[in-house]
Image (cartoon, rainbow, N blue to C red; front, side, top):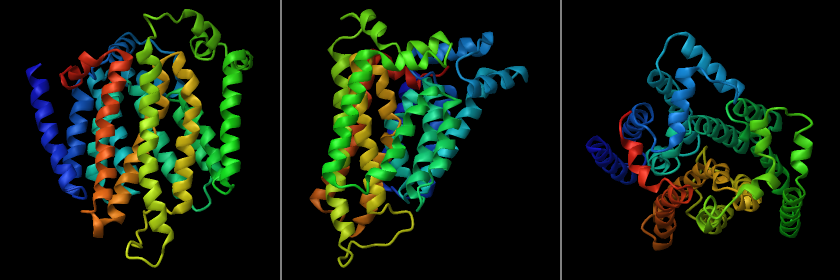
Length: 377
């Protein structure tokens, strides 16, 4: 455990440097090296990693075609699990760095926020973490593309689904391409309609009936059998923590986005004022509307938290978009960074990253094991 405290101490100093020198490339690279060490050599503080080690060493496959092929290839070559994890971690961090650098010069700061949350869970939940980073890159490309190429984005989602089938949920974000051109009242109506539809599907178990016609794998089918899940849920398995904390985490995240957009969009629309700084990576009004719609669409997950807090990972995978918007907002207000309103919004995001890591660990039930995320394998 001593090595864990040493690693944490190094990390805290790096975080402080990253927030102070938010656009420093050297600090950003130091952050990448630090995250690589944790990803490769630390255990993640969750039982999920033990499961991956067992599956890799015992060659137990059959959960996701793409990820299984990767494990089979490395196992066939006689490469140990740590080396396998190092390669996955390298791919993970390269995609992460490339994605952030497409959107902001404040890469170090975004990496620091990402390291607080959701990086630690990505260390243990290797499949979900790798899938999430592919989704994040696909989302950024989809948002930045002037035509918002749906085919390209769909291909990215399908590739990610080979790592983890949960990626298919993010196909719903294709709607953001259309709804950002609709009136506010229409958006609200469609949003409520989606909520009502999800609740109906949830209660009728319709999704299980449909999916069972195409999927024979009982493991995957179990994710859609909501009625059976509800029967199996007990107060001991799913108490108020599992139901309420993910909702708080999601609502608080959207509040942070709303805080920024309420000011950011107003300044962007006023092309005559001093805030109109032209950066090639800066999101425009339409793109910010898309991100807002994406975050609103994730509220479709709220009914699923009544079954299990693990569904929160679907929302947590897009939280880095919030950090990117925050970094752009700071860059956009670089002439007025000392403004109390600007600082408040930024500090809210930092506190949110810390809070959501705490409530996620507590809600899932491994809060005391979080320190083990920094313990060596």
